[in-house]
Image (cartoon, rainbow, N blue to C red; front, side):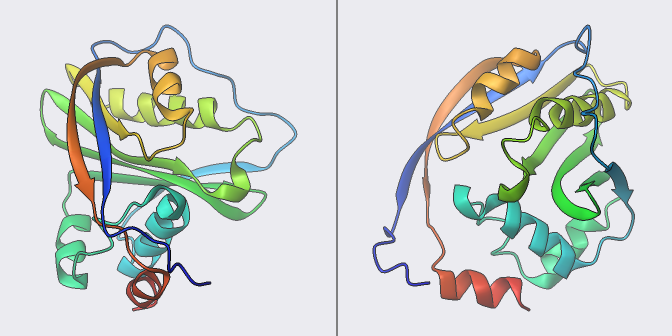
Length: 187
């Protein structure tokens, strides 16, 4: 897989969103599927890299992948992390990562489905599960950010479930080549 047309930088608009109270209702669990959502304790660095890569490859999630194993390990071992992996029909299908280190706020730092799990009616339920997990820490607010590189349905879905935009900023993303991404993920 060659990516010779990969730009050196990509300009993006990041939208910051907050939710001040839990949603009145959550989407129901999809039926006729074997679904498991498991909280991961002591996640191996290589598995976290795999999740970030498989969920975020299309959306240029590269910041976490560029961390050294030691830096990533340090972050993953913090007791304020709540990482949950979605399995559909026995296979990994997505994950979310909550940062709970501030008593008044829980950040939904990463959330997404793997490409094979999109378009199956899982997104709204899965996001609701992430939001419910965030509110279980009893914060004053839950925050998330999305950008113009994310799935086009991300921002409308966040808003539909109850997040409100509070600001935007411009950033530059330095995409990873397939070779660079492969080297990092296969460490």
